[in-house]
Amino acid sequence: MTRHKIQILGTGCAKCVNLTKATQAAADRLGLSYDLEKVTDFLKFADFGVMVTPALVVDGKVLAAGKVPNDAELERLLPKAE
Image (tube, rainbow, N blue to C red; front, side, top):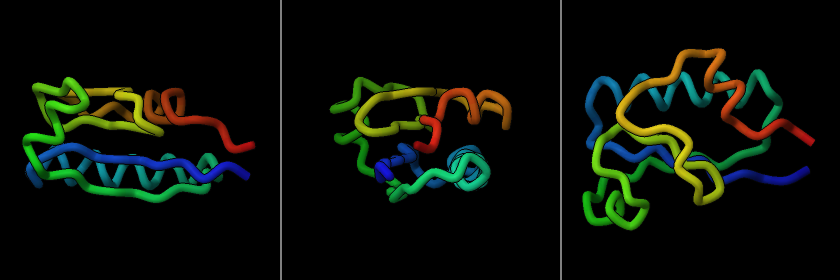
């Protein structure tokens, strides 16, 4: 099974916390094997081309920025478990 790297880019605001919780719940429902990292360094946001937080990055790819996707969107965006 592939282990995915999930990163939440944000300053720790309420939306960032909500995205973290929602992403973990969706990943668990999908049966993903993953490591979750919270990225709070503004300079690293720029490395991903992210100007608005929160942002969801999976395996180096920005999947959402500037909003907290709903549960259905998260399940569609996240990789499927192999």
